[in-house]
Length: 213
Image (tube, rainbow, N blue to C red; front, side, top):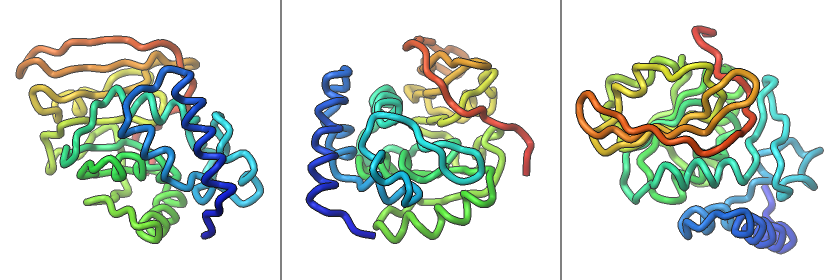
């Protein structure tokens, strides 16, 4: 659990890379500059922790590319105290970014191996989600709705209706939609029945799996 000056220097470089790629949200950049991403990865990959690339983790999943994490977080427009639902806890890195910014976080993971690992690991770094749940992200978390924001960290072949339904008016859903490549899509809830949709280019994610518990 070491975070050395070398790691900190590598993070500074990573933040500069993200700025060059167009990330402007200061809170997001600060969070990425602070969080020891190498601790979220298997020790064999530690040298790659601050390269702007996705990497394999347990259960055939990946830790998302830092740019993707930064971009999704930026699109979510998180403010301190916002109630956020994350679908796909994975390694916990995206969760740590949201918590670092000050979100009140509820996060769902459907791979039991990852769920158990991350549930123990995140608090060791001082990151405590309000709830970390083992379950099916497609159905969201009705009992805690509505949310200021919902972020999906896996590729979804379609947009699950429960997630749209669980947004506050004025809230945003950030979701990568598509089969092989995904289009980063943001839904802004304008009223009870009306949503505004914007698209932000192509990304690649592992698939969001349904009913797999």
